[in-house]
Length: 602
Image (cartoon, rainbow, N blue to C red):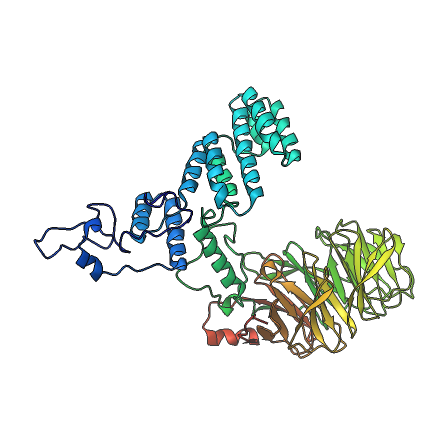
């Protein structure tokens, strides 16, 4: 949109007029934006903006806008234009002496939206001198001709479309693969078929607006602003505030691809610690001995807990009240249950015991039936297990040198000799198995081609590890060192988290919260520690357990629900604060929380 007629032929893409004082209208008889124009004292006659006396012009010195001020005016103008407030845009541009975009860009925009392709092509030649990349012109021309070709096809003008393909698109010698695809659309029998195959909205404002958005990416912002630029900047600002919020643990409503309707732009984003799972909601006391492990199901509807009392208890999670209820007890694990893992579809649960346990139990959780009780040898030690993503196989092993791959009936499919396994995990590729061993490392094993490689090397024993959902990060509990975060792709140590007490007990940490932005771990000092993934210092220390906290598990569906299992024989369920005063909250459930307000700049 062109705000004023001056400087049509200048190369400068954003101009401020020198003929009118800033803040005044240049059009005769126009009202000033802040009210009526003042009258001149001599004779009492009103003087319009363009005819101000020399004395009046000298009395009111024009303010020269800085580049950032001009940018802000243009951003506001574009946003108002998108809202359809075109008269307001005209007034803003006239009073500021700026223009929204280059005159040639305005013509180009209008011709594209009107489907005047020859004129748009001519405008492109004018814009060529203002563009930084010669190849961008070819790309833009290709996009224009593609739209022209598709519109001809939709209108049934096959000959005209063929002419565009042969005489205009092909000579560009650009993206020949796409040209082959476009030629195939000639065989479409009707418009609906064309739109479906081309994944195209069809002739009209919708597809042309989408085309214009793509074309604008090739133009310098001084010539034509990127689409919805102010909206994009506001969303980025909101996103940045959320990323730096210590306790943000809800879905990023809108995000960079959505709207801003769910947030206020008038206040900085800040989440209260009351919304974070720092408060005891429930204490599960059904186990009668140390609780060694806990794990939520993949769909978040169940929690499994394993104990030294030889039982596994399965709990149902009420997804609305977030309260847990015991629904099943799985018995007979003679050595106790020190590790549990759910099958990908949550149908089965595998239980393992401590070092001197040679057996593994595979339970059907829905029926409560034991499907498989596996033991290759009484000399084995099967202390850890991991499911293949296909749900049809699993790997298991222990520190006595066993490393097996088995089917659901416990049949041995493959084995790897001489690997003393401490903990296991399977990557989403379905081929790579990660195993920590007694050499203070994690190696990747491929059972298909029998290859292995070193991925992580620590200086102290790795007691346990867990893998993020993306498979790119691993969280390690390292003896005497604490919790370490590793990047599995770059094979580098990312962060060492402080605060936790970790000796030679096996303690299991976890990723959790929305987008797995948080990390939680048990500790030998009876606490649960929570960190933001980017911060080395804990943001919360949860107290309430009276002995070592062996394991924590964050609900994968409810980001405000966390479970912890302890040698004190209890499982605590942590959630947001109830509707109580702060003083009451701190003492709820005979548990307290220590909040560390640290930054995430580390």
